[in-house]
Length: 409
Image (tube, rainbow, N blue to C red; front, top):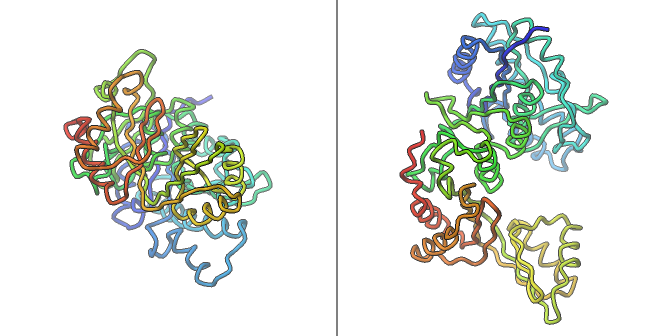
């Protein structure tokens, strides 16, 4: 059997939106081929909302009609953007003299469940890809899409192209999965709010997963989970600027692979538009009844604090009215207050290290930011603050934990 080295490269919508951008994709593919790799290129739909073939533009066509498609037909429409992008990218590669073939997600062997618009990958048949790679073809695959066992078209939900790339990397046991985007790599904070944010040279799977889960939009958490499952290294880098980007990998037990892991905090992130719910009970809070009913009406809760006298948690602000009506119907005394943001510090280095919470509280207090609620895990601490204080909170925590001076890349 032919042994081959494989690299999976994923390019986001802005990375394939123009002829100039697609020329850069060709350069990245040529670099990988020169390194002795066989290449799988995963593409998103071209551009963003308003651009002719962007997924949101296609979905807006339906919204303009009113009523809406059923979920199956919605997936058929939503997957068109990646199909267009893939066909154009394959032809671009062939024009440059590279043997290339385009495959839809289903043709590439991505098999999902039947949960249209939010399908989960249940397996990947890698043989269609290996067949093409063994013939020295560059395989362009439509991200964001797959198929059921019955060949029904499905889409993978938000961040689906990242998930496609990670799933293919895992199935092919690739040497690397590269995620090309419009930023230089994983930042210590969102540079729109913290201009001093640094690009990290390295980060662990756990830390990137938490950053992505808590609001950082550089990659989808499901993609990180898949790469971590197979211990497949990832690199997040810019399509538009030179530089190594950020390497994502595991940390061997008992070893620290960079200065980053010596720090209690490697990044700070946020989620906006949160509502704070406080439930009180004179005779105790029936948590089972409260959370059970909220689950029935599909309201997701976060940052839960539960005691005999009080339950507090946060929800998406869009669900505030529905949550209040649900709790009122239970005859539960509750307040639901909007206008909050969740700010989270992330770092595996905080595990077992005393004083991190004290530093966080001190920094926010000195910055004049009131903390309404907190929650923590082994590598995160989250605080609920007023949304108007979010930027101030991000900057103060970034400064407190020395992230302004992190020269990792």
